[in-house]
Length: 465
Ligand code: ADP
Ligand code: MG
Image 1 (cartoon, rainbow, N blue to C red):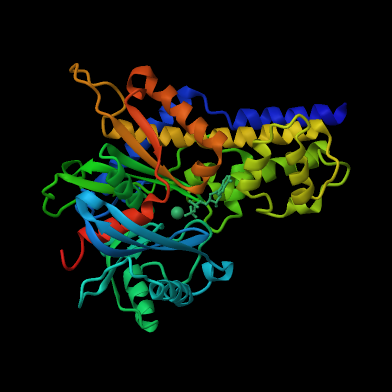
Image 2 (cartoon, rainbow, N blue to C red; image 1 turned 90 degrees about the vertical axis):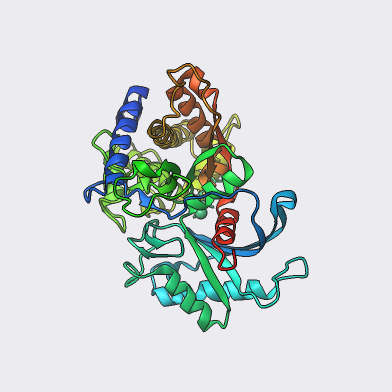
């Protein structure tokens, strides 16, 4: 009974510290809009970098030719080639390959990482078949999706601001990532030109727009989280160049670095942040994204093991190991709807090393997964809502005109595979928008839109265009 009382006390405390009532989400969204505006002004203390992408035109559908894309930004990287057939034929053929990045390369040297990538790309190019056509005498061209914050200096160049998501490579910060990739391709004897350097959010936005003309923003919920959207060029005070003809500029918000005293930051978040590779940074990302959700759950279960002997008299040593509980496992436990939570029990045995957990322990574990996932999903919805507010698509126009159909392209393994998470994002967004406005807003899965988006941007910025 004493154990039960202690467990209940911990759980109550967790519920309180992770709570995200709708009113709080609204004030978080307001704080985010304020930070977006600061970022667009170029305030050096702004939390959201609001990076200028140099993409002032999104794909139209007219793009044609053979293009490659490379996507680096998480645990996997992906190479892709696509034959674009213009307005009539659209995507004639596409092929891709996924390669996982050996963990030691994520914390090694930049040359080793880029050599590994270029070698995989060269191998992929060697398998190009008859269905793909490169006009005589032309160089192959590539769109490079690089999902880390970059200070772009043009559509095809930019310097790395910092690593995130578990990458930590010395000497790469401040370097031109296209230069590094190009030199690695040369070392491989691969003749290819990088004509577009894009963040994955920008790639997803481009790919999303190609599929649906009403896409105005893209959100990634994967290993990390980030968003990009179409801004009016004249709403970007820090842009000092000529105004683009389109009047628009795609902005990469880098919203993962948002922090605010309004965010429900628990003791578990603080401890995880403190022990992370980037303490004090990416606070919003650490509450939302796939790299961290399972780890937050682990920390709460560990507390329950310590304070309330959740897994018996001794604290299971496996549970002490950071990141043993991965978000896909959390998702599997959370989705277990069997009457005896069999799957969850098996996962606990596997991961924590405790066989024969009681039904009650399993229910508690599932409840913790639910609390952590729900907080993440609701915070993500608040972020989406803040972008809609920023561009004035959060409510029906007051002049009586109809609200335009507004589509958000979403991608990332977390959103794609964690159903309870993605449905909570959607219901929360509907709740924040209200009935009337939400009927014009659509959240759409843009599965791997960033690869095709990067290829499309490579096409529209081709040296031959
Ligand atoms: P990245 O963000 O690294 O480019 P993805 O978009 O594929 O790659 O997202 C991968 C992330 O998605 C993983 O790190 C994991 O956190 C999350 N994820 C993948 N599968 C699942 C799943 N079944 N349930 C929950 N999260 C998942
Ligand atoms: Mg990705």
